[in-house]
Length: 454
Image 1: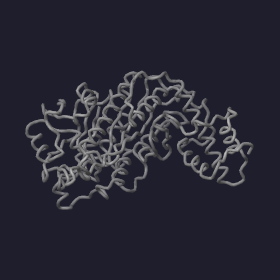
Image 2: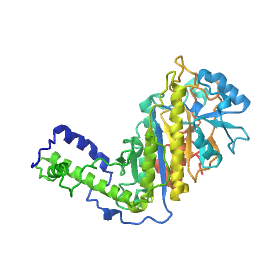
Image 3: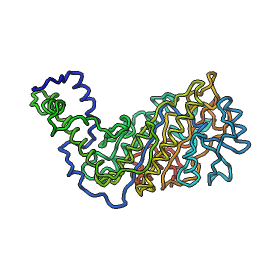
Image 4: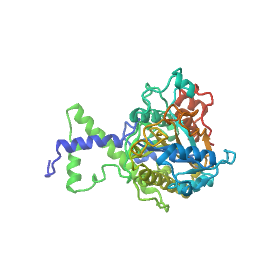
């Protein structure tokens, strides 16, 4: 090597770890910008954008009843976690016979979008093996998901879209498998993860392409046409002839990754800058990057895409829950609202749907530390121009410990399964009924079928 740069074993391992970020399932041969020269059919574009709230968001303070009886149950059961009624802003769902609710008061941006019809809530969703009643739970006469109330298991079940432990692929990835052919032979942009790899997007043929929340791809300091020391040294390393099988495969992987990065960067450079202002939060940066990638859809030639973003910090067991959750939900609300405004700016608000997921809900009563412990069913949000908004889909639980929706201690038994929620979102992606059956093989356990979100 002709320069003094120390490409140590540690440096090589770091670059090797970055290599999967640059690749997607099905991308094996030489990838060039020309591969993306195809033009997407005008107007025929749809995307899903998942926002996972890691740690288990306390849905009991995300969606709150404001009618006298409902709020009395809420206030009495939540104890020190109950939010003061005077600080709550009413939303008026069109399907609750006049019963008013409120989002968390820090979610004013999404409250406004709910009232104007672009946002909907989905009540009491969670993993199930079959429809389940309190009587069945108490008598132990029905199957329930394995390892309930476990972070890792419930995250896996949410992202796989089934409570069967045998399902290793994510429902976003399985959906991407179904629609990848619409994106041509090169489908590297079909599934894109921002802020880390997720099981959600892992399909049989499609794997997520990973980018950072800033929109960078990992090899930004390397320019194959430059004479700077880093670029020259790195070029010598990856272009050297390798006799060892694994060394040769490493070189080939890195080269393909660099080429893929150049394709993505080229596509991003073709898109006009967005005028929409995003909040300067981690989630805001992630959704801004997603919006930029969607703005580049014609350069990629894609007609269907599935994105994954995330935010942590929702495992709120302690006395700081009220403050922590207020900040977290404000972050979610402002970032999602900005993303929706970006889709309006791009003229595709009715073709892009964002939605939330989380490990599980949390116990209804406050625990001894002033927070809440691991629960089960919870409430979620769906946002987009095609969404049947200003509605609460699903069944809102009776907020009473020992009530008809309680296992015991204020853990709500879900009345909508994750499969039903996910299948409804799959319809918004444009999946046919046969494709939905393929993606969600356990959906038949739930006679009500997919949740209707349109």
